[in-house]
Image 1 (tube, helix red, strand yellow):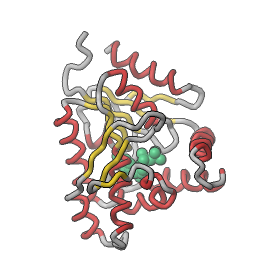
Image 2 (tube, rainbow, N blue to C red):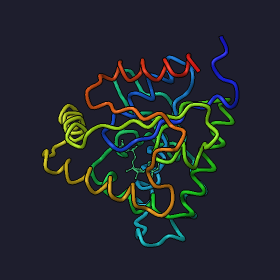
Image 3 (cartoon, rainbow, N blue to C red):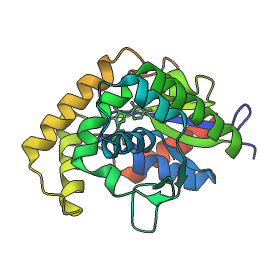
Length: 229
Ligand code: CDP
């Protein structure tokens, strides 16, 4: 069966804590595609800016850094949800998930020139891979507007906080439910209101409310669409 007709691309967007990363990885596995986690790219750039002590208001310098990133994304190690991320030859998979990086991504993600450079890199990745499952905030709307399949995964705010809190607890990251709640509230706001690449469901994306669904159920729904259409 030939599943894809146009460009071999599945775009999955949604807010933090919607289960997007795990779902995307499993969908990619089932379809035999690579999964590109675009959030990891914004996180890697944020870490680089922090390490170089560049001020987050210095858009010139940050845009220049984003143009020349030696970044390798590869599938996660067994037991991990997250992609393996190597920047300038160093494995930074764990560091980019720190609360500090998470809190600072917003400064980098709102810079139009940064987004332009990363979007270009993301498109090149899909072309180079001959197709991919790509997840993020603006994939169906900006990065791959012609993606053959588009999904927007969401969940209630309460459920997303619960998921993110248990995830951090399981990893041993010291935090409180209140802190997670505040982080998600702030990120929802900046993600949805930034001038470029804001989080938004594409008109032609399938909306999936995952609040009462297990990861396996969501994956089944997505694969069902891909096989059916
Ligand atoms: O895993 P989580 O959903 O918490 O975040 P992520 O997907 O790793 O993305 C981290 C941050 O990068 C988000 O809060 C977004 O602000 C930003 N991002 C973006 O601006 N555009 C994308 N395509 C992906 C992520």
